[in-house]
Image (spheres, rainbow, N blue to C red):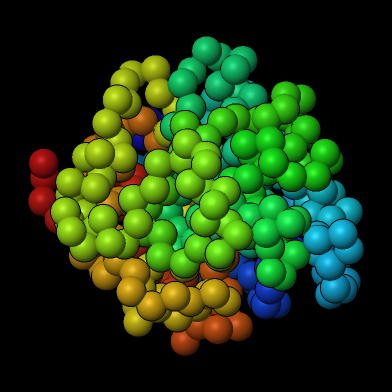
Length: 304
Ligand SMILES: [Mn+2]
């Protein structure tokens, strides 16, 4: 059980995405009662409102990157906000926005861990590895590059965020639910030391054993950051994302994943990203995301 005060930080932009609409994600999560549902769990929740940044100019890539100056501006704002919340001893939940924003949030968490002597572990729940580079990317969309950037492979402005290059390193990541990796990206992933628990692994050993493996070696000094890309979920239950890939975790598997993370008691920060209300049906994906986040903060069917 988490006993820290929670801060919600809205980041209404789709600056790194290939479809417009993730900019509406923070409001959809508010409409789905995220704050009230967490408050009902006995948590102290404050909604800090939304960060601000440049509009999406919707331009083609330049030197392999789309909207790089705007992506930098948004991530700088995210970095400062998340770093400040952590410094106050609070648990920040970033309401994205697309997944490029994890460069700002995780670089801030890594910096906080350096300040406090904590060991960082990142659980990356996603259909994609997000390990692209300017050379490997087919699209130039930076939401496909955050893990590479955080590991020091990307444009200088993004890899130097947080004052240390790289911001963190591949061995801190555990990627879960992966089922779509671009051709050039496959080689980069293979050469890195990112641990990937892909859908085949989940099919073969089940979600329980997968999570036991992903959460192994966590101790009382671990700061666990969860980066929850809503496209992690199977599109039949979560249609409200721009980049659906079939064959993801179903409702029960996703709940078990969140419950097992909650059981560690070590969650220190969270991103909820890529929720795209333009693709959703009556906000069902936002409501599902809120259900799962409740489980991540300790809701379970029975008293355990
Ligand atoms: Mn992602």
